[in-house]
Amino acid sequence: MKTRQAVTEALADTALELFDTAGFDKVTVADIVAAAGISQRSFFRYFSNKEDVVFGDRIPTAEEVRDELRRHLGGSPAWDALRATFQAAAHQMDADSGRWKRATRVICHTPGLRARYLEKHLAWTEAVVPEIASRIDPDRPDAELKAQTMLNTALGCFDVAIMRWADSGTDQSLAALVDEVFGFVQIPHT
Image (tube, rainbow, N blue to C red; front, side):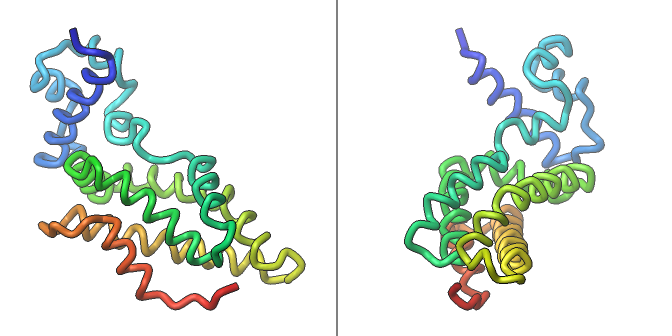
């Protein structure tokens, strides 16, 4: 007998394949359950809606991002810590690259899902900016502005890397691509 996690993953894989092939908005729950060979009632035991199939628990919470950043802030400048934080996320995504590439393509090519993903960025910003600002110099009047600029630049770098990784046929790991993209940006050490 399959565990709940295995069924959830199999159902998500079926749905993501349909979304990636036909487009998120064109695929219905009825299409998903027909392809998976389950009832709609069973679908709703695992997911509350189609969006949850894409996001599930894939996207880290603001607290998880903040905690990962804290692990890297100890002896590193803020920009280097941000780079290491996003590389850690990239390594996790590389470990399950097929599923992540498909989910990323679906998110990036569906405006409503992209908006939901950007809401996550806003939550990350609220959690992470104070951490960065406190490392810059909390007494500087521009510390928060500098921290916001750094974080939004890092988020932009990460987005460029994941979109390129998901949409291209490259065998390059996401972690390597994140490192490359972050390397294009020169941030003075603070």
